[in-house]
Length: 291
Image 1 (tube, helix red, strand yellow):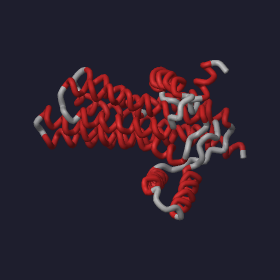
Image 2: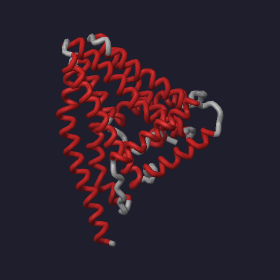
Image 3: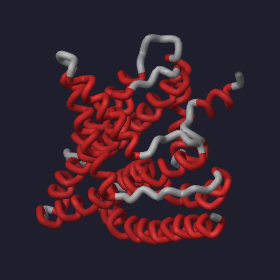
């Protein structure tokens, strides 16, 4: 098997990856996957280390000085590389677990909370205006979380309709509800029980905030109508946000990242959401005509 073929097998799918992950982080992480492939290192262990670097990034940002912004950026870069690496290793070795999927999914959210707390503290030091600093930081944090969540929703919808790789949210809730019941009958394993409960709460929140669209069209048709849109969505994904923050950190202007996320980021998000809903509505209408 060629390295290129193996690299492709380590991805979810080429067209569903964030662009910056595809051209930067996935190739870098794939090199490290190859180096540790024959060791006993597990994807879950990599996920835990990634999470530690993510939390460290937030702590470093909190110091509020240029040197610490650079250190935080380096830690953030390592976090995302490891976050890519755990999934690639799991797909190649086919040893992923339900708990591993939860941990991998939560890395972005826990890291984001840590980083935005650090940014809020840093902004308070820099501006000496507590109200402005935290209002801007909270607005940017909520904006990023919403942008990432809706992007993930439409990416999962794309994977479900084109590759049948992701189960619907109802099936996901059912699967992890069954896992929760199984864990209840087992003594200990409190951390796993906690993670499953939190993940179920998140799934239910996502279900209530995003309406699942049942599109009965062929994978080819769905792909042709949504592939470019998915690429456009990726520009407000978690990795793009991370790279933007790193760039602004090197400019010593973390405030510009926050302002950018609240203004341009949200305008782009709303325009893309309108376009996405229009495309899905048209697909549904076309299907009704055929039926």
